[in-house]
Every structure is written in structure tokens, then in C-alpha cells.
Image (cartoon, rainbow, N blue to C red):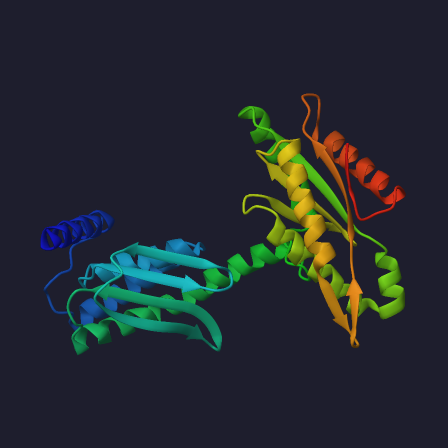
Length: 309
């Protein structure tokens, strides 16, 4: 029974491999002479330049590689921007490459198959990788530029530039699919006093600390923005008032429990939160205003609390 299960599992994996690479040209047995090699490199380099999507560049490269080298699966990972591609079978023998160009890390590429690679095959892979490096670097730089344009450099949260478009889109989706939607406006209490007393470098640490605590308290599908100064906004898709209030409580408690070490002393930080839930007559402007007014009510009534519009 154990052998049968193992065989069934292997057959299933092989079917997945076949399905993954069904659109690829089968690996050829013909040797690559100098002319064919140069033609392949030129064609590959041209195709790799057609996309600035990291996934697209990697997929195109692996498609070309598979035309000359049989393999069962591959993986590609990158830390910043975060990319994690895993295609088909990740077992057996592998050749792995930590890619870089002019000291810029370009991620790790691993290629898997059941049998060992010959030296000539490894040379082919390494030669083809030379054509991958510049297009991959361009794609990574482009994606990093996009992230920088839409994210706050200090906190990592999305910035004001992308807020209006995101709010309009999230409300539109909620109304279209008749889902609930909520919005939180969060302000750091007594932040001006922190800057005046300890300096702006400490203020930056407080901002980063609060942003990190908000991010770990909300769901992966929620969107965090640094709206301006010490104020943050969270868009809570598919979240009614009860759900949103629970998330706001998590944010409040997480920030409250976090302590910053400063010259041997602990600096306590708290936030005030205004919460508004989407109503049928709401526009992006009105729901934000209602949450903002709720925030000021929380401030006026003692801070370190949540008020619902």
C-alpha cells in the first residue's frame, strides 16, 4: 500500500510538471554550435527586454532554457521587492544560483530535476544566465521605483499619493459586491511633545514603531497609509463595524504595549482612533470626514481610545 501511494504521488507530480511546461518547446537533443548559441543568446536577450515584470522576465527565461535543457521545476526568490515563484516539482537534484550584478542582489534561482546535471548542461545554464542579469536588474529597479513612488520611505506604509485612488477603488468594490467596508484614522498622541522633547530622530523611531504595530495588528488584506505627519489611515475591506472595532482594539493595545528604549528609559506611546463604517449615501470624502471627526472626538475625550462615527 505504501508503494502504491508513493507511485500515485509521483505520477501526480509528473502530471503537474507536464502541465506546467505544456506550452514550452521540448528540450532538443541537437548540440549548440557557435552560430546557434549566438542566435539563441540574441533571441533570448531580445525577448527578456519585452517585460518589466519580474515574474514575466523569469518565466520567459525559463521557457527558453527548457527548450535546451530538460528540468522538472524551478524556484526564484527575491527579498526586496518580495518575490517567491515556485513552479512544479521542487525535488531531486538542483543547481542554484545567487544572482547579482555590480553588487546589486538579484535573487536566487534554483532548477530541479530527477537526474544529475552534466558539466555541459551547467555551462549552458550559466551562459544563458548572463543574458538574464541585465533585464532582471531593470525589472527589479522598475518595481522598486514603483514601490518607492507609492510608499512612505520611513514607515513602509503606502503614502498619500496612492490613498485617494485606493479609497475610491475599495468603496467601489464594496458597493458593487454589496460588501461592508470600514475606515480607521489613527493619530499618535502627543507626538509634537515627543519631537520637542527628544528630537526628530526619536520622532522618526516612534513613527516607524507605530506603523509596525498597526501593520501587525491588521489583516493582510487591509491597506495601511501614512496620511501625513503622525496620522495614519487603514482601509478595511469586507469589514463591518464590529469586525473593524476588534481590529482597532488590536491596534490600540499593540501600540500601548510597545515600549521604546531611550537613553535607558522607556518611552510609552499611545494612539487615538476614529472609525467610520460605510453607509449607502457615503462617498470617499464623506466616510473619511466622519472617521476624522470621530478621531477628534477621541482626542478631545482623553486620547488613547476609539470613537465610532
